Length: 323
Image 1 (cartoon, rainbow, N blue to C red):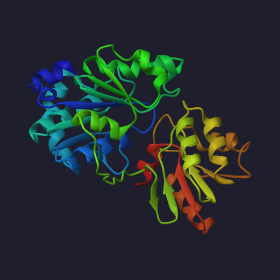
Image 2: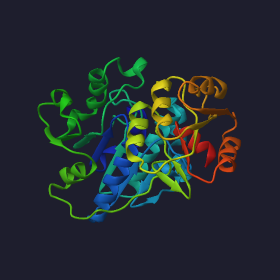
Image 3: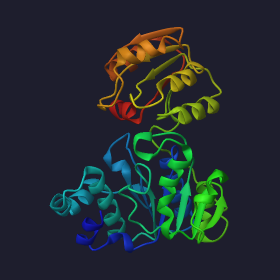
Image 4: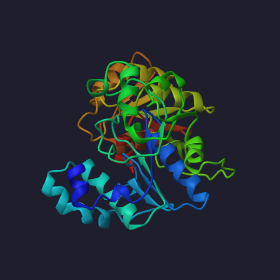
């Protein structure tokens, strides 16, 4: 990443940054911070991943999607020259787009972890840790403490670190001020003053209501537990695909508290658990389980089977397949 950004003239140095790390809620926090700053008159860029509705969803400038194809075209030759991965190339494209668009601030979501993530090239003055739970343990560590340490490694230049959980305060660099809170507090830390406005945002696949359907990208036990706690209305059917490296049983237990019927399907991500295997494991939790490997047919089956609510969840990759 450093070699690629050097070839591009170090666009990440053209503006201050806010770095968002954590297990869940990073995209929502990133876009919320950008919206809050925009409401306060700042021209803000937002970089999120993964996408649901399309690649252009990942790069926003001043409240709108950037020209994604043009942004990627700008970095393609240099990215190929250094052998950059897809995520590295898209990250560089976002950072260069923000420089080209002369943003006042870039809000950057980390992809995986933090310390070795491609986004850890910005010297962010404000860092937000949304939350920490077990994820990608083969890469990030076996305990929440180890995972938090990997994520908070992006705070190497931070003057303020915003924490939703004070248990990890000892991992923050001593030179940084610790502020409790979330997205609003991160935006206020950047501005140095309170914010009165409360702009509304919509992110595809995050508590995304579509008529009688709810699409949510809960993709780990912390996400499904949060989803379960948020929902007040009953749902008749869950359409789900879950990646094989997740705690599948814990997620199924939460989803079974939301609806009694599961239609097990399989996203196109190669890490997705086969639909038949997901159905076998779901039988211990749901009173009724059906198997339909094709996501579109699974959703159509759910729509035809009930006049009530349908929940589509388990993986953002499933939501992307259906978009």
